Image 1 (tube, helix red, strand yellow):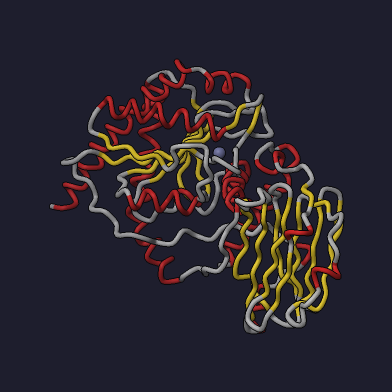
Image 2 (cartoon, rainbow, N blue to C red):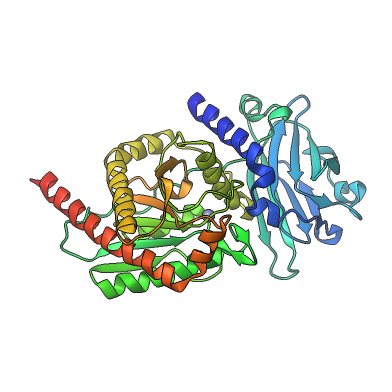
Length: 415
Ligand SMILES: [Zn+2]
């Protein structure tokens, strides 16, 4: 686990360096949200503490528990607390929370602190839209946990980190590996959507561009024949990363292709890049990209109650031993296919990073960055129907070729 922690630290360090220039989610949500006191409340009983905070719009937030004295700290980017009263929130609270405070923390950041009467652990944190009021509701829940666990979870305030999403659980039964006797089931995953627009530039959103491309690519695949195609989202809605993986499993996917076109602080980067999963990212930019994608999930809300299951983790790494080389070959095939049709590839077309969406233990999965919205030429290409057709034209035979080679390998293994 220590290597994982040092990896996470490296990711966060890279992210903090890149943050001022990265126009992803944080920037779009950087406007100040106003708290709505009438729809906010705090409840504390013997077994649970619940905080509902009503906000005029979603904001990035991070949560940390600290010891000595035990407290929960929520940082927002950022909230105007005008009108919120400590007294009225604390009214009727007799246990759990002994005191609270909130206010500006440092430029761009607001903080709320709940003083706890003992070791309480976070069991849920979700930021969602309330259908009735239209307000963004941050709902936090806590439950008592043993003191040693609390101490283990409590972090140094100097190291307040973005809580990263949990690993996707294994659900459903893995499908028999395809041997070429049925259509290849392709799950296309248009990145982002809804609350999470992805990269934005010149009034264009990555989420919409990718949905358009996914729909077009689906048509190309169906026209070519030999494919069954499922999209992880059909419209501009938010789909948690974990669900995208579950959709692929439920569909019995033979391969998973996540589609993105992000923006980098370095506006010179251009061309397509194919990513495969790795705990150690190829470089800081790849690490930051993966972290940004995962963070989008957190913004929209995430259940923190499930803990990493060691047994599941071992099973998953065993399954990945077989799947990882198949993903690598899929990525190679895509690079070759796109290049064969004259598509522009990045100077380093094959990279690795720890993308949650690539963590299927048994479905070959790759993430294709079609280009960089931060680059003028790439942005123009992404908008061009003929360029997108050219890309699709390279991807379709690549998936065909990979499917055939993968089936032949499965036949060989069977003998
Ligand atoms: Zn993206």
